[in-house]
Length: 513
Image 1 (spheres, rainbow, N blue to C red):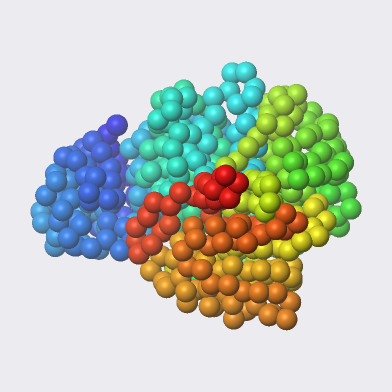
Image 2 (cartoon, rainbow, N blue to C red):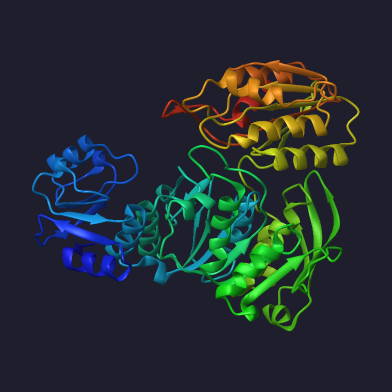
């Protein structure tokens, strides 16, 4: 892989990103980096975000051949400096070019929504790869899968990677023989221009609720929604959930750039969509092990996809039927047959999503990634409905630091509305904040007349052990937030953590032996 200075300047000019060039000399980069620690001789170095002069100096010392930055930096010495008016867009554009525009060799399915992105991504991933001849890559909050070898599957650092990492991953996937890719597209991906220049073959909108609003994230809900809507603008075909309260906004956005014939609307038949449904799905029954539903096409273009039928999903939660419906439609657009889709959905499993552990003398334990108001509320309401719990509802959670500030009020609201008998507030990726203060903020939003007891246990492992050991057979224990995450983000570092599932399993073993 190479990128010449001439190619870089032409691309930047075409996108009105180039401001000027300092120390103008021709070069050919044989690598690209934004982390000075990874720079190798001949690299093009991107100064982005909070890059400090010493990072550029380090990159230069390690052999960087040129740099891209929002302003000239003396630390670059006599290196050619490409000065741009948007370093994030420039990095996305030049990274794509360096890696040979690998997106052009992939059928891209992008998924956005406050809730359900990961579940929908896994549904679509499993459905596509269950069809003979399809080689499928996955970029999700949980795992990235870029090929068939064990080393091609690894834990994801971000829901949507930084643009340079994204195009590097796409190139690796293509080189590994992948021809399809399913990826989650976060609002941050558009806010930070991580997917600048990408055109998706299929874009899915699931839902939107207030989240990711606060310092270091979206300044307000309008900006959050705007960023979510950009997937509709940048997709050749759109799949939109008609049951979401903001459906009209997303549909109108899709229509601004996409032929209405390429916009597919799905929802429950009892919904009040202002636009005729292309697909309706109806619940045939659900329990703690999964659900059954029927998918029916309502328009001719929907019938042409030929994905009607009865489907079973092996993940609990009636809200997952909508996620599965979106994945089925997208898989049909990619040419997957309904039998292959149905077989895959019956066996899809997602680490940290609705995992259930039973005990002999203590409660039934549920581990889920639920990490905001609506997901906690949905989860607990579903469990109450399905278990007809006669004992207590014990909920353990915490809130992240430095981002998602609105979640703290949301957690207090959810705990109050669902009348938790015991709320155990603990640590969950506190970042540079004090986890005790975060939990006190959650507590300030709890209606203590509706919540039986609130406890503060900052050591998450100790908190889980306490929750399970103090439960009775009739209780349900909900461990919310981290799912199968094996790290705690503390003061800029990923501190190893066993995961909620592992801690819960170990606790149960100790109690029962």
